View: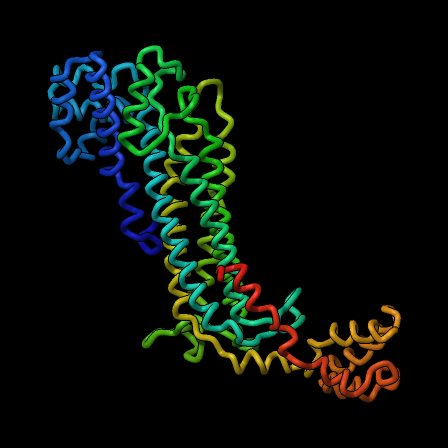
Length: 434
């Protein structure tokens, strides 16, 4: 990803320097395990560990690879330049390139998952704070973009919190599923490397041994990982779309923070555009586009091919770096978001009383009117409000059929806003706990 949408900690996971350091640790731990088993001389294993503080020369490895056309061999050649050819002769014994590549990739994904989990938790914290702040701030709920019934701004934040809480569970599951390693040799039979080596390496790297690998770790694990990232990105877009709607001029119930010196348009000085959440919508698309290739990587020929390799070299860093940036940006948007409670009430009253139509409908049916007749009575008065911007309550009070079924007091009682918020505390307890 370009620096504009990247954060240093996540970028570092995918740097060549980090990758080669993990490759080295895999090879060194494997040598250590073999020495413990008496498969190779202890002094050779110790010699490999002498390179633990070496800064591997990426340019030198690239230079070797230009000749060998093989990245792991290029690295092993460079490692031998530091350790010594004779001392390094047991490095990679019985192993195959995928043992190093796949185990390293999963280490990187686990580290990325830890950062993403922290990012989800940070966003949840911001959403919870704003939910509690606006628990009772009335706003109109909308379905199909049209006024429906009253809700609160706190409930809007709370449902996004609950969605992110589900995403947190998904991310923990994805991390657990991807945290495996394989040191099983060609076609995964352990013919030339003992399973104890795999167990030792995985334990040292915080992984579990893959129960059964071929020459590669099964890619259904990776498909599930990237699918989880795709769901998280869609949830970010879900929040972003709501903020973008709220910031529309004719709505203006909430808005991104507009900093001192910020400019909204090169042509129109009055503009305050929702650029951050629009950007987040775009970033969500980038993360989601990695899901299909990850799913297609599951089907490989026989014990292995490398059709997945070029895909993963791209989607690994791209998806995690982009989602990390998106989580941080969304957290900042929620933290600094400006809320306009008065505008929310003005919007709710744009068609006075209309959002109470269901209460009147239910009251009429409870008073003995058939549902079909009750619906017709309510709708004909509601349409007058739509067409002439009159007051719904006044229209009902002027309707003889309505008044024959309901008293003035019963009609007036149906316009109590508190009716729609009486279970907010119950919902909050379900979402946030007692």
